[in-house]
Length: 58
Image (cartoon, rainbow, N blue to C red):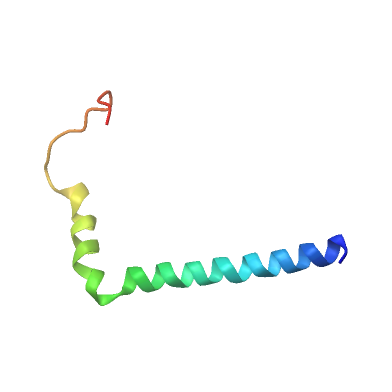
């Protein structure tokens, strides 16, 4: 097997891998059971709360 064949197979495998991962993430985001979790997360920047201390570690 020469270099070009290895590169071609690797690129094709990586493309398929990342397409599958993207589909999994999209399915997770739009899954009906996660709707409330993402709705709460979307409201976090708009709600008053404690300030974050940027110098605080942890």
